[in-house]
Length: 88
Image (cartoon, rainbow, N blue to C red; front, side):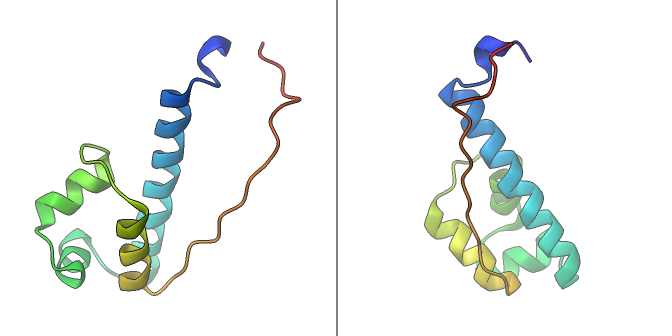
């Protein structure tokens, strides 16, 4: 990754979404639930859930909360200061 893109909002959003998706898939494994099972718990078509998890469909905080509830976990959000990180 070129340093000039490291703090670009689109790049940061993609990284954040990827992390959410990884955490959801991990929780699905812990719960022993596949995409079809989670989609059923959420009352949505499996294809829509697959789009959401792949980033093809924009998601909302409300949707993330519904997913956490369906899998029996809660989101714990943290931040870290990156202002001192080098751009190169």
